[in-house]
Image: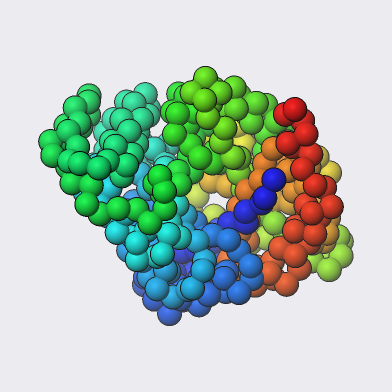
Length: 364
């Protein structure tokens, strides 16, 4: 089972320990950031969706122009652009990037964030719309003649399929969403289902759940898990750095007036991650929950801490569960991307090569 390693880039320097103070868009930084990921051996980079930040498709086009082979995983929120135009927009980007585009479909898990962009649907309606949206996109992408479509959320007639995706049958779909409703939509559409960095037992449970749901549709998705690795030459040094990062995050949140306790996230993924953080500071030997607990786990915020070889071995345990895509990003985003390329990414490939295909064997 081949593996894929994904990083994440932003349009300006930013992280939990370094809030941006300058312009929201820094083209020179984006080019340097993207090229650092390519040089480090990442397969793709995630370009996030932010209702208060730069538009991801435009950032992705700049990343594609600044690199040669780096794949792009564009976070995309259904409902912001009508499906016929979205199909042309994304197929155009797939063409200009020479087939390097993938789509991370994010329906949204925070009402306030969604309402900034004028979206007032509730959770169930959002996922119903996402299901219909993806059916509409695929209909246009795979058609040989103009497409008519009529659904509960979208209706169009004679949509042109002239702008084709470079990839066949269409751009790959990565899917995020941990609720039962989200899993049912993922089962129908996800080529890769994405989880945050939960403990091994929780990931095993979710993989089994999604795999069973997808089987009903004759589908077999890949699985991705996201972490914030903290690596150093020694385990002691790595844990020391983790403690320093936690203090920096704490100081930054105090400075910005953000809560440190009593978090109540709306989305199920964050609720699962925060519940795991309540089980202890360190789980499964080196899964560190410190930042997730402090920030309310609003995004992927759990870390694997240790030497490159130790973190690679920890990722190998997820690989044994059927996970073949690892999204890794650091708290020092650019510096850590370079560091990962020097030690962690080679260690991951070496460790997985030694494991062979245990996940495939468990399915036989």
